Length: 63
Image (cartoon, rainbow, N blue to C red; front, top):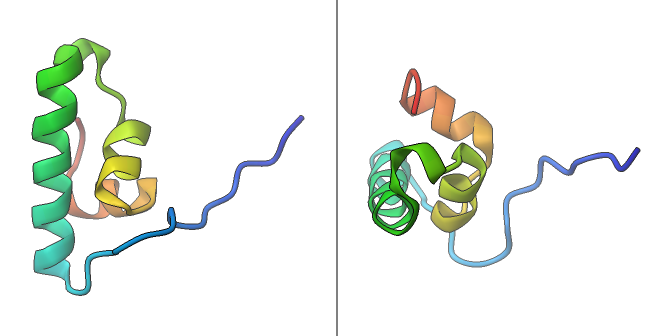
């Protein structure tokens, strides 16, 4: 079984809580527009926002 890494993807990462939240919202809009609510995944939103899944749940209760 492959162990998943909890590292953030390489690239520009948000600097502050406000930046992180804004990046997540922008990423979610893109992912939801592309896949719809049911087809969007938290993982894809996190990757698009360049944060880890924990940051999604820190800022938002659920999808």
